[in-house]
Structure formats: C-alpha cells, structure tokens
Image (tube, rainbow, N blue to C red; front, side):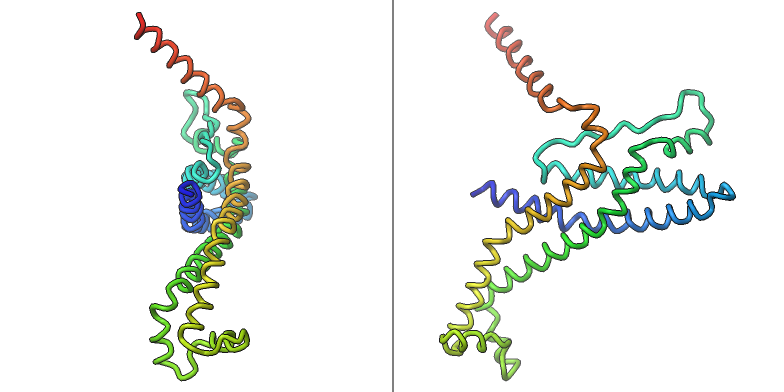
Length: 235
C-alpha cells in the first residue's frame, strides 16, 4: 500500500512539474528552429540554431532528471560532442550542430509539449475532482444556501430513488469521489509512463546504447566491494 501511495506521489509530481519545463522548451524549440531555418540562407540562422541547441540542453537535463522517479531506473546524462582541443571559439559554439543528442533534445521539446499539457490537465483536474467530491459534505451546505436549486446533484439522487435530502446528495458525491480515488493511481500512472517513455526514448536512448549494462555492472561492482570488505574484516 505504501508503494502505491509513493508511486502516486511520484507520478503526480512528474505530471504537474513537467508542464513548466515543457512550455519554455516548446517555445524555444519552435522559435529558435523557425528563426534559424528561415535565416540559414544568409548564414545568420546557423548561430541561431546553435544557440537554440545549447539552450535546450538545460531544459533537456531537467526533463531527464524527472524520469528516474517514474521509470524506477537511473537515467544517465549524455556525452555531448565536444570540439577538439585548440579549436576556435566559433567552432566550439557551432559544435552542437553536429551532435545527434542535441537534435533529439530539440525534437523532444516539440513532441513532449502536447503530452505534458494533457498530463498536467488530467492530473490537476482529477485530483481536484477527487478531493472536492470526498469533501462535498463539508461545504455543500454553503452551495445550497447560496442557490435556490443547489448544484444539481439532487436530480441524480431523485432519479436513483434516494430523494433530495442533504444526506443523499452527499452520499452520491462521496461515492463518486471514492471511485475517482480508486482510479486515480491507474490514470496518472498511465499518463506518466506514456510521457516518461517518450522522453526517455528521445533524451536517453543514445546514452542507454553506450551503457547497455549500466545497472548490472553497478550491482556487480557493489557485490565485489562487499565481498572484499568481508575478507578484510575477517583478516
């Protein structure tokens, strides 16, 4: 049960915090790429594209940092291509144009945005509806006092044959809140895994190819260190 709540918290935090990262990433991607390609004919767009790729590295690192809590495995940072030693400042500045991961970061900024918007909207609205439904008996009296017809839930209770009493309306609202609470971990988990899977494919696929057995090697190394420490303690 604790693991369910822990994962629910991680998925909720991921979906709610992804949008503030995805929004500037999308703006930088669209603006920088459009301006760079549009002016590439006169060579002005080349440094614009390079600056856009450099700016996206920070946002991509923030997006990559979020993935471990959702996927349950570490995500290694990429090794960006560097200019050779002694290269000019201009060549170092333009080196991101020849780096594959930098372009994947740009693609991530474009395709991740709609998923981040959807995940943020679903997480926020589902949490709000769940809490509001479960807490309905605490504030529904104010709605009834402020409006003559209430909030309309009494129509549903009358149709169900429960009457239009305050208890019946509150029971229906709480029942709906319980159903939403039971579905909340599943819904948010699905959205979080979809977005995190796409982000991992674009932000860490090249890194995973370089470290295909990273977690296994780490486990073997830890086991070897433990064994050596045991031998030293026995000696």
